[in-house]
Length: 286
Figure 1 (cartoon, rainbow, N blue to C red):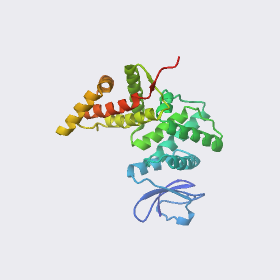
Figure 2: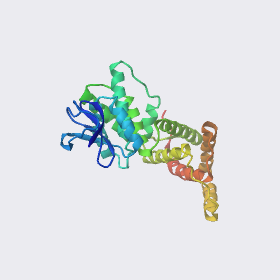
Figure 3: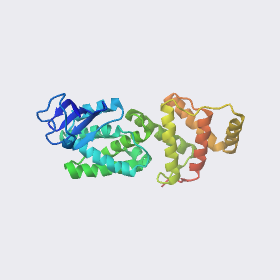
Figure 4: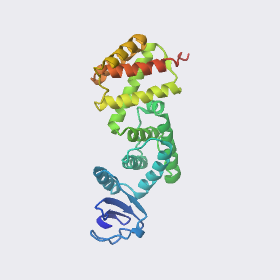
């Protein structure tokens, strides 16, 4: 490996024999070294590399700005997260999560803490990821002696969901706000409330996640002119008239709030999910 940049005494940016850039770490690895020199692989303790070139550049910039132990901490946390999350996670999670955790630790030292206004919604809609966020906070407390604000579990959860859906963080906030709005519309329509801990509600939220992702990425399911599909849509709209009406209310909310038009295909798909989840509505407490 040839040195491309000496980041500090313990971190180097190198190029391998295939021309791929990597970040390598090791005690004293960069001490007295110069660009163009070669590094013995045996001296390297850890290697970090992103498959995406833009991601690799962001990784290089990140290790120049945060302590190495924060990157190593995040790598260990990510290993635990991957063991719990069954679906593939975007490789950039290492970068975004390390950046967030390092910044949160620095802010804590300065007495600055951010509140997450969507923390309650994140706990409700992404319970598994939120629990992982809480575990991360416990590990940070144990390894760094830093007690981060409980809202940080919600921030970490969003980073995980973002890596699951391959979206941006700003899009994840929009997705969560949209789910909030749809649930409010639906509960108002049925004049009832969901059991937010039920399996049916969890399935509905999963549908809304991917529906919102399609919406914000302009990838809504298109309508087809196939006679069979049109007959099926008419049949669902007639046989599930009440739930179809609710889906139309959701479409109106999306149009008025997000200025996007739902296809008939999306309406029917939403109707089917509404029919399924409406069976588990319960009366409000009190």
